[in-house]
Structures are given as C-alpha cells and as structure tokens.
Length: 376
Image 1 (cartoon, rainbow, N blue to C red):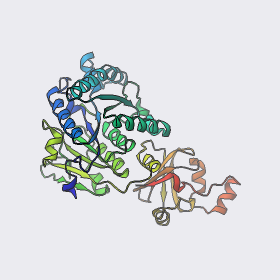
Image 2 (cartoon, rainbow, N blue to C red):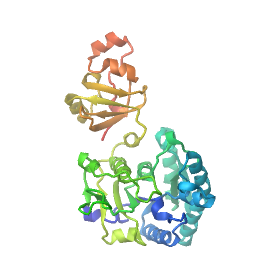
Image 3 (spheres, helix red, strand yellow):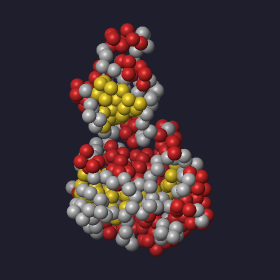
Image 4 (cartoon, rainbow, N blue to C red):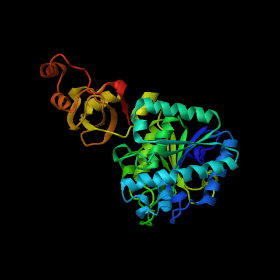
C-alpha cells in the first residue's frame, strides 16, 4: 500500500497540498532560489496537466523582507521586525510565484491567513469556500501565514501545521512537506549516524512522538520535526495522507515520484466535517483526565460524563476547546467544554444527583457532549 501512495500520483491523489519552507526557498543571503523554485513549478505544472489540483503553502516572506530592509537576525529579532519584513517580503514572494506559474500557463492566487481565521468556524468555512472555487477554476492558491498582522496569540508559528489545516479546509487527499531531511528518522540524522528512516507511520503514538526534534536546522525557518508530526496528526485525522520528503533535489516532487526516500503518515478514517475542524484546532484552554471506564464509553461514541473525570486542569469557559487524556496524560480526544473550569472541577467524579445538589437546576448531563468531541 505504501508503494501505491509513493509520489502521491494524480491517478489516486486528486487534491494535493505542497508546503515549502523558508530554508529551501530562500538562500542564506536572503534571496529566492529562483532556479530551484522553477523546478518545483515545473513539477506542479506536470501534475496539473495530469489532472491533479495543487495548493501551495509557501514560506519565505520574512526572510525576503529582512534582506530588503537590512534587518538583523533574518527579521526575527522582534515581532515588529518580523511583521515589517513580512509586509515587504510577501510582495516579492507572491510576485515570484505568479511569474513562474504564469510561464507554465497557470494562474496564481494569494491567500494570507492567521491561526484565528481557521480556529473561528465561520471564517474557516469562508476560507474553505474560497479554496474550492479557486481550484474549480484551475487556479493555484499560494498560501502563507499573514505574518504582517499575526501576533504570538494568533500565530501558527510554522507552515507545517498551516499546510495540514489547509488540507482539512480544502478536503485534500494528501499533504506533502518539503524538508531539509528526507523523512522521519528514529533520531536526528544530522547528529546521530545510527538514525534509521521510518518509511511508514500508521498511528502517531508515544514512540513516534519521541523521535521528534523541535529544532530548525537552518535557523531560517520556524518548524522542526515536532511541528511536522503535529501536522501529520491534523492531516491524518481529516482523512488525508501526509508525507515528509527531501526538498533538496532540483525537482523534488519528481524525485519522490521516481522512488526517492520519504515518510508517509497514513490517513485515519475520515470524520464528519465539523469533527475534522475540531480535531485540527490548535488553541486548547484546558485538560481533562479520565478513567478507563470513561475512555471505554468514548470509544463507543458516548459523551464524556463528569463521573469518569479524575482531574481538571487549566482555565477555560464553556465552549472552549479542551484535551481529554487518560490518567497518565496520553491524549485521547478533544472537545468543547460544556462547563467552566471551576464548575468542571466541582463536579469531577460525581453522579448526576450529586451534581444537581452542587449546581442546582442548571445541570447539563455531559462535561463534553459527543457531538462536540472527536477522538484522536
């Protein structure tokens, strides 16, 4: 099955998100690697001609703007510098994409998004509708985080997770992350010669998480392997495969299609649209630990009742996203809380009659209702 997915061919993968990081797109002097990018665009054009719809998530605006503005630390010395660099660099970045795609007879469209755009349900649906229409017109959406207005509170912080969320919104079949390594290794291959490539991941468990190294080797980008694994979790829970492949070859997508190394994270069973959105949300306000009985109930599709809760952590209000974990802290699910944190703490481990005595008539039967809960 892995062999059938290698390369994400147009015959089986109709809609593909391709993410390109700053370290690949911009050289150490802060200039666009035009010849390399032309090769990527040639790969995209071939796939479009074969019937595949492509969405590009492109980093590079801050690095480009920092060079033009002569800002220290690649424009990342302060939030103000990063925002200014992004505002200048985004024009250059989108111009390069438009020119190179135009030379291949393709039309580019620019979309700039913040984390808040995809955490807010209405704006998420608006973005999804825009992507759908652009793709139906044969346009190549080129997407980046809107770093000129994003702050710490409303940032993705890396385009790996942005690519996965775009894959969700666009109902993509797969996401491919072009990286400075050719996949997930058992250890950091730059520092450990005994590291082995993991070619397929069917489930993201504690062993897989332990392999992540959060550092960005170039110092130019903001994502490491940890962000890529989180992106894989988001994409796979939405029913999209995700691959990490090397972006070093002149034609990286062609190289992968012809057998180059890579790691494929296999998609899980696709969920309903609202639950896909829930699974991908990144702003989590609290954590609820549950016992084995409550876990078994969730696996059967039931709501989370207060009786199965062993601990409540964090400060959240009704409607906020919370993580649901086992007693050891392993993540099981996410959902929208039906109670504020203070009340959730008061009723944890208690039955309905006890809850009524504590809270009066304003009792909701579930701490997290099954319609607002997604297993991970």
